[in-house]
Image 1 (cartoon, rainbow, N blue to C red):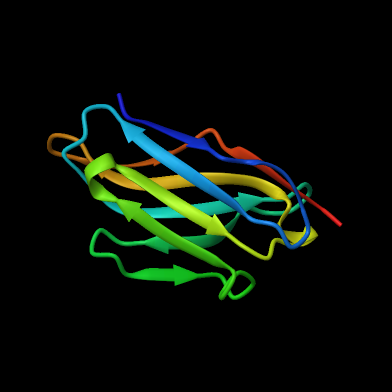
Image 2: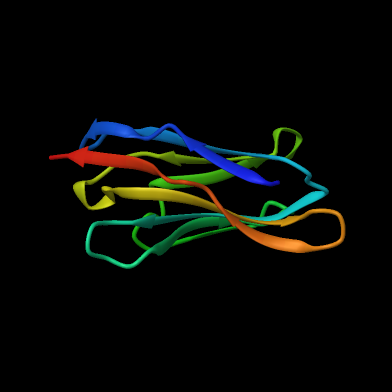
Length: 119
């Protein structure tokens, strides 16, 4: 059974920083793309940032220059460093990963972590 667990969310003032972590565990052969999404109240879930197994990154325009996604393959962990946070960044942040587990590749989600940015 594969699990993704996010951590690092919380309450921060505008202009502050947070670092989210997402650690995977279970019967994992390899981890492909790892992606952060977020969902604000009343809005659809949106892609924030992603990173391939080779380290190629992509970002939503709204977070470019402020957020940095990285991964530690030895720890099966992906990070999201969030700087210059704005109230509009308030959302539940979810980790998503494509993971190979003994013969098949599945798509997995974490449970989410709340980020609240006060003005």
